[in-house]
Image (cartoon, rainbow, N blue to C red; front, side, top):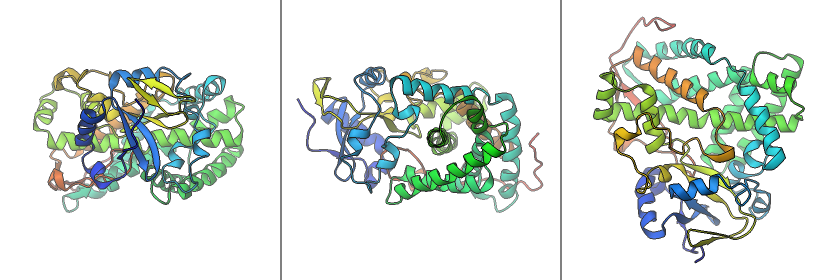
Length: 403
């Protein structure tokens, strides 16, 4: 059997609003491999079976991540191309080049002082919370807390100046939205990062960029694309891991009750979200160099194959009871195989501290609108809110750093 020409669109408002319902419908219609369109006239295959995903993630020989043949067939203005096109980085390479780039990334990330990051997050979160804690008792957590906190923490890790942070943040958001300005966002990021690297060559510091300059022979172009990857993995997905977890805590009485009662930790809440509502819902793209027979279906050569981390985690053949997920790290939200995210521990810590500091300051936080009134951003890759409006008793004169 070959992949059907009748493809399921992943760029619609219906998909953005309730992808989980569509995953289940597609599972009944297509099985583990779903013919999709990432954008109009951009065909791909979405993997929604857990075992099938593991097979593909752990077989880079037959499912390499190099998209160059594919992207030659895609118009330059294609909205999803900037998120999928070839870059000289670990995410889009195989063999020796993958090892070279991944080693550079892992070695630089290993120099981040995880203990010291607690103080960094506390120092940055306190003033942000204080700005709205004593006001009207209402806030948009995404715009007023989570976005600025995550991007400022990333700026510390990567050594960004304020102007670099502003341009890179804007460019990355445009890329993740996969709209008409995605290509412009990619170019904006590249220009800002080239200037950043020039500054760091002249004035190195205690940051990941400076460490890469000290310990690798990567060219400026290669460094730009390592930083694009690190910032991409640590920005939008991190923001929406935090926001999706806070949404869970404010709307799931059973979970919130368990958490307040002390039987569960913030990490358990994060893992619940990584199972059920991961911020990077569909990605881990590969491009088979020849037709591949998987689960009785022929996948076309040089056409994207995406892993749906969200749908695979809900595969009924492996689905866990909600309490069995606590402390369970078998979800695919960090990817798998040789391209698995190398910064999982750092990502967990940033999210945990961001949530804990907020809830310590505002323990009576609650969602300000009905959950069905929340708006999810369109696009095939992420599961991301446009805003997270909350209410709380005003807390004037809140001290920071938080104690």
